[in-house]
Every structure is written in C-alpha cells, then in structure tokens.
Length: 385
Image (cartoon, rainbow, N blue to C red; front, side):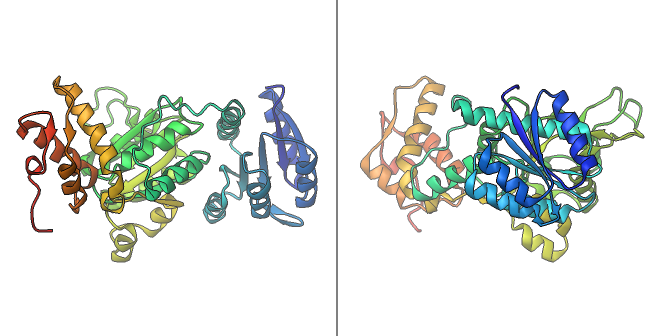
C-alpha cells in the first residue's frame, strides 16, 4: 500500500495522532488537516484514496467536506467521524454521499475494516475491475431500468443501508445481489434471509447466534446470520414482518455494529452492510405503530424503488427471450420463441405478479404449445384487463 494516501481531518491532535499511527501500521501514508480550509487546500494539491473527517470542525461541518468531495472528487470515498450515539449525524452524512462512518471513541478494529473496504473500492476504480462476470444481470433497456442500473452502480460505492422497495416479483433480491457484487464487499458473503419465514421464537438465535447449552436443543455454538455475513452484506427480505421485540434488537445491532449471541455475556463486533426489502409500505406501518420509526430511519438511509413490469413493458421481449432460453436449456427442449401475436398479448397484460408472473406464464406456455413457436392462445392470458 506504499502508493496509498489518506487525508485525515480533525481538530483534535490526539485523534489525528491515533489515526496516523493506526494507518501507518496498515502501511498507509497520511496527511492531516485541522480545519476545513486546510483540508480543501490539500485536496487541491494532492491525490488521496480516502478522506476521513470529523463532523465538527472549527471553521465548518464535516458535511461541507462531504459535499465538496462529492462535487469535485466523486471517485474518492469519504468517511466521517461522529460523536458516540449520534446516529442522526451519521445518517445525514450517509445520505449526503459519505462512504461510511466511525464513532468516537474510535474502535480501531472497526476503523481498520472500514479503511480496508474503502481502499478496496479505490483499487477497483483504479484498475477498472467491476467484476462483471459475477454481477447478476438486470435485463432491460427501458428508461426505468436504465435509472435503476445507474442507481445500483452509485449505491455500490457506499456502505449506507439501502431500503429496496418494490412489488412482489420485481426482483428485489437480484437488485441487492447486484449492489453487493459491484461493491467493495464482493469478495465476502452475501447472506439473504426471509424475515417472514423464521418463527418468532427463533429470530434472535438465527440473527445473532447462540452458545452451546443456552437453551434446549442448542447442542453446539451457532454463529448466526450477522456473523455469517462478516465483511459482506446481510439482505433482510420482507423486513416489515419482523415483530416489534425483534426490531428493537435489530436496531441495536445495526447502531452498535455488534451482536450478543443468545446465552453469551459478551458482544462481538460485526462488519456487515444492511440491505433490506419489502413489498409493503414501511411508512404506513410506521404510522400504524407496527414498525418502529427509529429502525425505519436507520435502514431507510437510501430508498431504491424497483419498477414494476407494467412500467417497463418494452423490456418484455428481452425478458421473454432470456426466460425461454433458460427453460429450453433446463428441459432439454429445442429453442422456443414467441410469435408476434404472443409478444403483443404479453405487452397488453397488466402483470400484477411482475417478472415472476411472466416466468410462470412462459413455463406453462412451453408445456402447452405444440411446436417451438408460442402463440397468444398458448399463454392463456385473461381476456378482461
């Protein structure tokens, strides 16, 4: 890392020295500034792979520096240092485009993990490595899909929690996998969990793990989902279905970046990025009192809307071709294709079940058609729209 240089911005000499020593042990060169003005001057003179700034500076706010870097040096990650427990400041920084945050007193292990992720991102930028071979394909060239792909690429450069909202069948997990694959965490696990599929009495053990003998049936230690995703991404699908008691514990784990396994007296640090999704309207659930506002605020740092299929009907031919190709390969059938009338029939359908419904319709049609051409009648779509 001899070519790596990090800009440290903090008006407290002790903090600057602590950061300089810690980063030097990682083989990283540093430059330090005590004020916003000094930091901006250094940014104009030298090239840095990361900026680490305190939120409170004598001549301004750390958010001012985040905004400057976003405007002038968008490829450089910037992380902020916040006062302990000041999640409002951390969330504001993430919304402004900060890569991540660390809290005072600084946990050096968390700092090293964050710096490692940021430098990995900078290295990917420098080499042009976007890991396209492993990135899930999001099919479609419609304007809604172009906007979605652009947003995914931008969100992959951050550690901010993302709330993925979309109707059932739109491919929210595929979007989450794409964010992970393009991010600095792509070499660590992507762990998806369907929150609605876990019995409430097992949630704490599933999420945080347990120690042997902590309850009947705990015959061995279990790491839990958070620790299984260490260094990577935890995707909470159908997060709206978590009971209130579990929402409190999840919020604490996210804010403290630590979990306590069931039956243990010690917390363990975890480094995971949280992506969450649901087809429900979380804001409505917050208003109804069935979803905690503080948890909603914490996971909804950035909201990403996945378009429904009826919003991108022009993508149907491409989607259908891909689905039919997979079905033909799976069932060892000759290549299947849609007639022009078949395509028109699909484009006239409203698709309440979105892409998942399209897959089911085409699978059924493949079984019903008598040759390699799928006609409109083979689709068996309802006539009443």
